[in-house]
Image 1 (tube, helix red, strand yellow):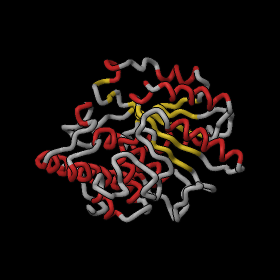
Image 2 (cartoon, rainbow, N blue to C red):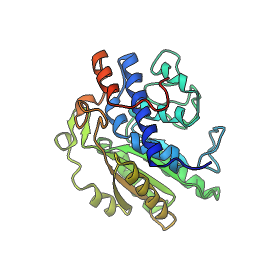
Image 3 (cartoon, rainbow, N blue to C red):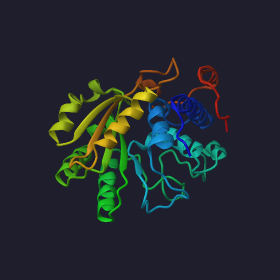
Length: 282
């Protein structure tokens, strides 16, 4: 099966953004801001980059693995999982409802295909990814492990334990990305707790570091391709991915105010008018 081209991927991303907004609006709950900002990344990853196998199984042998650390952006992940065939798109209508498999933070108890660890307690995802990547090496599995963290999440100490651990153990089958949008729930990261020079920090910890524009489909695909080419050379890979929170909706973009706030009826209508329905709403 041929991979979709850039135009086709951008059409998927437009539909994913519609899904995100409709999901959080329906229950007046959820995190649209960073979900919208990471839409290109998730679309590129699941429709162009990951080596996946079907049906889904928990052991993950013989395929690439992805771990979402900042689990509050579950709307974008659920949409992309559904749109790429892990479960029926109609199930998106159950987001955050009682007895739904689509919890506010991804969980494993409900058995949702695509989810291997519960996430949302910030700071843990990179550690999970390190362990999975080491397991692949032990199993002589040449596939890769991908992880995503938020930039505000880098204020958690466990991230930096994993950041030391991976280069020490030469975990060079790991590609981690940071959603570098400069915003977190309480305001700009520079005001809450400055992250300073992230590139210099990751380099100092022994990682290969690349930088990318996470809201440009062509560039994020190129960045992930470059990251893949750097694997197997003794170092883990860090992709510092600049994004805009709320990207794609003019009144949401670039502010922490939409970190965890759902649009009302009028705001939803305005937002959807800016996004083309390309695959059909659920």
